[in-house]
Length: 142
Image (cartoon, rainbow, N blue to C red):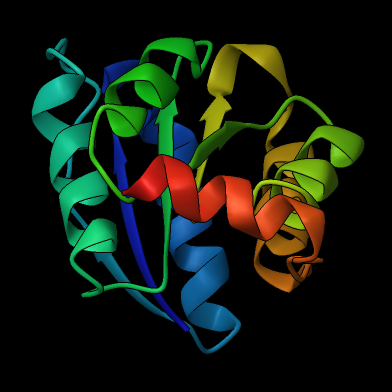
């Protein structure tokens, strides 16, 4: 799978771990940055991920920050992006099954690294159920 990833300084450490993890699993990963733990303004790195996923250049995206909240908000401002905030396995499972999320937002300050890696794997593996949710999602994308 082709995956875009981006983070601010507060998500940098997990971003690097997720990139390694996904590449080891055979995924093609492109990082839109940031490329250090130096303070940055998160939209500069989150919006390019969202634009690339919306344009179909990548199948999925992962964005990270301290809590993941601002990153999810920034990503969701891009038409065609459905970014879900992942707090635990159930929230990630539901955002894929019911919302067909194409971008996942995680907060490095909210979980340990192992949990973040498990949530990314779950996000990539969980299918969209379609059905009654599909018409509403398509309506929102228009």
